[in-house]
Amino acid sequence: MKLSLKIAKVLERLIKGETIAYSVAKSRLIEDLVFENILLRKGKHRKTISLRTEKGLNNFLANQLQIHNLNQYISALENEQSTRAEFVNITTDSKNSKERAFKGFLVNSYDPIIAELNNKELIINPVAGSFTFIYDYEGFKIPEDVTVVGVENAKNFSCVREQRYLFGNITPLFVSRYPQNQNKDFMKWMKSIPNNYLHFGDFDMAGIGIYLNEYKNYLSDKASFFIPESIKNDIREKGNRNRYDTQRINFNVDSIVEPELLELILTINTEKKGLDQEYYINGDIT
Image (cartoon, rainbow, N blue to C red; front, side):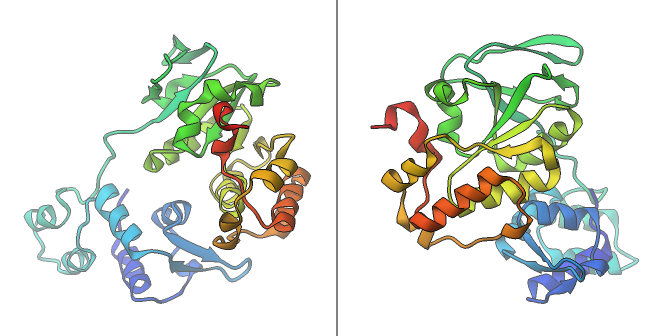
């Protein structure tokens, strides 16, 4: 990935607080920043972009492109006399780009899953307290009857055995949303396989927003939101009002076509409560 002078200047304007027409800023890098929730894209016909968090942008540029000073980077690109050594000082990369050295994602399972990695059999069966990290995800294949369950919370991901009772009707392979900078690799893999995706997150507006913005938008019909049968009573009895009061909706409810998800939103709004997914770790239920 490379940051062009044009897009660098767009980012500079966004940092200054400007809202910019998406049509003049369209690029792969901008798409990645929207995907990472660093930039906010609005509108249906006349789309615009604005900056959510300057700190998030600076961290992205530093970690993904090794650009630690955007202004110096722009000046070096504008100066035809800039040497490779000067770019090394600015970006710590003489080719002015960075290939991420550590790719992949974490998976977990409470029953053995016979998978394939680079044309060799791989049995996914981590010992309790450990996980399996898939590095060469391009060569990672799983049986088509396995449902990929994306887990939003690290505690739930580490305690899948205590949540077996929730997934009795499917064969699940659990994938962790964190570390979040690995999530893009998971999405590339998920779009390359025929398996269905089930999102297991918090039962509040923030959790629904993560599902819709980070997964449903990209996986379409193969993605669905996991909703326990007892959710209405659970939210009523164990829900947290603060999780409702402090959150804002960052998605378009009218675009949702999943009846169960719409019913969940209705329950959340009726009860004015949200529920952490950690509630469903078996030992926590009373």
